[in-house]
Length: 140
Image 1: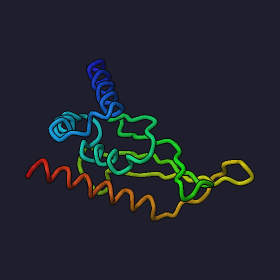
Image 2: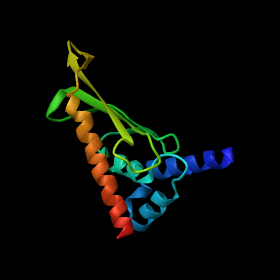
Image 3: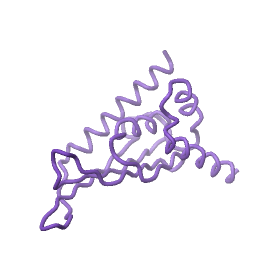
């Protein structure tokens, strides 16, 4: 059983990294197949919502998605990264937690900086909205 879960996680990870989640019927099939771990709608919605950030690791069974640092053109001396935790196998408002990290460049060194408290909540709400839309499109 453990070998099966490990193999499934490896296949899902390969699909995520290869970009094979992009099509309609394949997306629905993969969303339906992720079970025993994180909620598949929250999982897919998290990847969609934060697709602009570079992906470091994604563990669908453990429910953790880690993104790497990204600098945007309009703010070259600032960078952000994020981690998403999917906390439940059910689609619930408290089933996702986002942690955003921010650094600013001072004297050529990256130093930690405060993140607006609303940022995490806004991202969580965006993920929840996307997850609900994914579920509704599959049901409808």
